[in-house]
Length: 279
Ligand SMILES: [Zn+2]
Image (cartoon, helix red, strand yellow):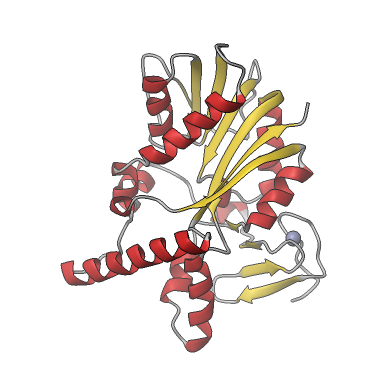
C-alpha cells in the first residue's frame, strides 16, 4: 500500500504505510502522524448520546485543573486589562466556557458545536465550525479534544487561523500518539493482544498526532509555538469498558499506574499546544 495514500498532515505519499488493516490505520514515517481516512458518509455524527452515553465519566468530571492552566495562559499572553473575545471550537458540554465565565470577567465567550446550549452570558452557536464565519475575529481560540475527530486536519488548522486576529492565541489539545498507553498498545498487538491498541485507536478518532506532527500542522498553517504540555486527566473522568466492579477496579488501577509512569516519562495521554497566529 506504500505510496498510494497521502499523509493527512504533511501530504507526503512515499513514507505512508498501512499500520493496521482491520481498522484501516495509516502511519506517516515523515511526520510520525497516524490517521484513518474515512469517506464522509462513514464519519461519526455527534449527537447528545455521544456526550452522555459514550463518555459519561468524562463529561461528568470536567478537568478543572486543566481549565485553570488554560485560564492562566490566557492571562499571561493577552494584554493586561483589555477585554478579549474567545471562541471554543467544539465546546461539547460547554464546561470550559462556563469555568472561564466564572473566573474571568474580561472575556466575551462564544462556543460552537452541534449541541444546543443556552447561557445568559455565553454565546453558544449550534452548528459546524467549518461552516461558520465569524463576523469579527477572536483574540483567543480554544479547541479541546476535537481535531482527532476531523477528517481533514489541514482544513481545521486553516479555519482556526481564520478565526483569529493577527497575534491571536490558539490553545489546542488532542491525544498523544507517542504517549505511554499508545506505545503499550502498539507493543502488545504483535503478541496477539489487541485490546489496548483497539481502545486507543478507537474508530471515532481519525487523527492521532504526535508532538511532532501537531507542531508541523500548526507551523505549516501560520502559527508560532509558545508552549507544549504533555499531560493526563483526573482518574474519576476515565470511562471504563462495560464490566463488573472487580474488572472496573483493576482497569482503573492499571490506568492510575500508566498515568503516574507517563507523568515521570513526560509522555502523558494528552498534548496541548499554546501558539500564536503570526502577525
Ligand atoms: Zn506526514
